[in-house]
Length: 558
Image (cartoon, rainbow, N blue to C red; front, side, top):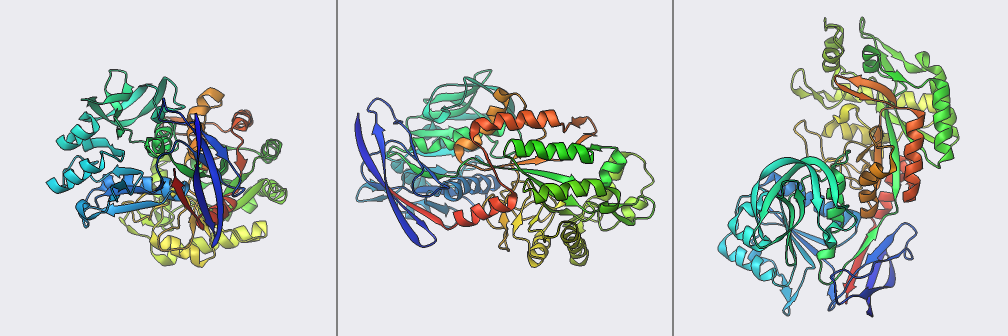
């Protein structure tokens, strides 16, 4: 064993902080002993692995703007490495910049510790002979990683040691021991779409039950077929662990900054909703809510209450404030806010389209048909296929903001649009009204309705609002600690804050039933203790990310 040092400098708000990190080198294996250090910043954790000759840590991501798949995966990698881990990232669009023009070596030594080849993930070969030659030459000294359909291309198949077979939903996955699969059990439940491949010179690290590969390594190069990048369900767990382990491919080791295990619980549609009325969904009574808040306090947890302010009459379309119909529940919410265990923030004025006539004039009594008639409150009107006018969106958001301020004595600063439907106009109105943080689902790209991306820790495009999106499902989180582990542990290991979504009610929609009970909540809170979770309100997590955006890291690996 031998010990060497890697130097690290971290800049926070213009101030430079330096530290020396040590790791042990094992000649018999790629991965050396991991040492966690939390000395530079109280909110940071650092990991160092093996080392080699001096090299400034930097990752290159190659993508192609003509490929939606390439845009998706490259955006995810840029977020994970650059935003969450603070590793310097260079991202290059090969649609406009030839690969042969990118300096990959200086004095014969690599400029990058890893190269992600995402420009070919759709299986379309847009690279010329000179670009392939450049990539293959770089691969002699730098680990290459690609994804999905890339190995349908013959040259990529040779580099990465496998041949594309097709895309398919995969249930159970068998796992071989490897640095990339560290912390994964021998068998995992995936239950999501994956690209599958046949190893041809490479070694399968993750396989379907019939032996087809989901991850293949050929020397220092890796192909990954896992398609579950994000999501609130268990299928994202195995993928998150593999992506969290990607830096171990670096022959020169790595240093990354890592946030502590932050978590936030977001309950939407409280104290009630028009939709809950015609479906007959059940919420806690005031006393049950009081017991729930006591439970949170016992476990050092807290919750974000995303408020709906008005019920819409089916017969007249008139709005009735929930402060009148659910006064006792609102009073318990106020108590919880005063005790610091709850934070009331903005969801929707009504959770019903501003065009109430769709609802009022709907002759059906079927709850599903009524649900379709009340969508959406912001952004997009599915009845006309057009954006909801700014005037109506502003009217609803102003009413929502004013009501919460009247009910709870402070102005809300976090907004979650109902159904996660909104557009660029919606977020501009929210910012004008003083909202600082935005909590949607985790979205990497613009959607077909005109909603901008909501990427954790980044600003909503066109605004200064910080995104704090949900990335886990509280109501379907297993109460069994062993099953809960496969969802929570990957995010904790990756240093990704967990934002849970809940609806705080017992409800059935079509064939799906969800329960919200005190017992299940306690079992989940108890199981999460194992991970040292620190609970934050969404506005507090937003503040963490505001500070995090000012952190820059430079690491020299020896």
